[in-house]
Image (cartoon, rainbow, N blue to C red):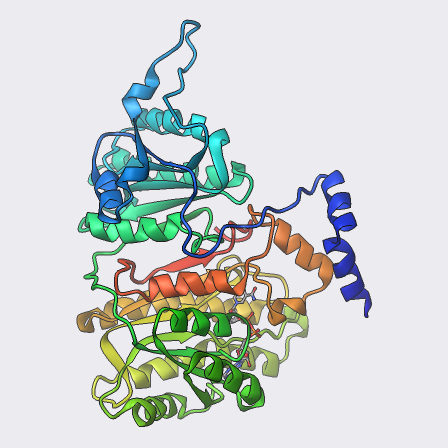
Length: 459
Ligand SMILES: NC(=O)c1ccc[n+]([C@@H]2O[C@H](COP(=O)([O-])OP(=O)(O)OC[C@H]3O[C@@H](n4cnc5c(N)ncnc54)[C@H](O)[C@@H]3O)[C@@H](O)[C@H]2O)c1
């Protein structure tokens, strides 16, 4: 056992956890994961009027579990002039704040009033979800300011919540239907969004379709870590997975493919004909008419060095694997005539990183590649919209995988505690977000969603 693993074992032992708690580093709460919804009732607080959220909850059959708290009613005072709390259930599973019609600064008081009693009543892994218009589409300056103010409230709430509870904001498109909003709320309420915290989810004006099963889903970098978790999650949803990884990882890759009854393609994604080889694999294994229903670019590498020590090889390999290969593969597979290429109405999801948002010491190459992925997502989405193809990204924070196991143990512990949830995420947390974005029912396009537990680095 080396010094690093000794330290790691000490820090995660019961004694180590106790010592950390005594030093002011509280223990992290295990997160509610999977499809499970909060166990306590949902509270719907309305600020500024509107019925969109209640209609969305009805669309996903959650009205019966919902107590409605109307914003203005909460403004009553007791005999000493203090806020009289509205009639909240003792323990709340989630509070949803419908601010979709909120237009003036004064109305923000209603948000405070409906939230305040909920902050202490929220169960572990509870949810605070704000629903509001998008500041970019407000018709007046005050309206835009108020919508943006909600983003600040949401992020601060995420930092104040405890015990695995999260806070997120859904920004509506003008065309968002109650059914579309319902699908997004379902994800946010469930344990599938366990590690999504402090994030705005920006909805797009995009046509959504009912769920389709047995799509062909291609996942790169799927021999282990996040890629393997993504493949598992798609297979569990009934999709047929094609898992790709370098020949050196062939054995592990075959293991994943066998476990999931999928097919494996040993391929270094940086070879010039990688796109053509993926299409050939799909057409030969699934039939000449077969097309890719979802493509997930997950393969990635780190070659960290301070820029003063960073050589051409470390620079080039990271940019090739993490960015250039994706660009080339997309170009080939997006040829509408190509057998085994990307289908009309398909979904592409690429993995970026919070390092691409914030930059990171020793990671100019990695941050360049991951910021590049975000640029790719935003630029490609409108260019393929005509074919109904939707493109999004996910930016994980600190996720417990072999890749991050190579980070020194003290740095790892600092990363974990730099998230509002006081812990690293699991590969399944990233996988859930990707499956959500790749779902034909999800009205999000051209966005990068952070799955980082509200890591302090970045926006
Ligand atoms: N783990 C984290 O905390 C974290 C955070 C942010 C982003 N990410 C990103 O998530 C993705 C997966 O990360 P992970 O932690 O699971 O890493 P990992 O190292 O465990 O897995 C990456 C996989 O990609 C494969 N791969 C590498 N180069 C390849 C190539 N040229 N062709 C085909 N496959 C190749 C590897 O063999 C490996 O199986 C990466 O893009 C990474 O940058 C991870």
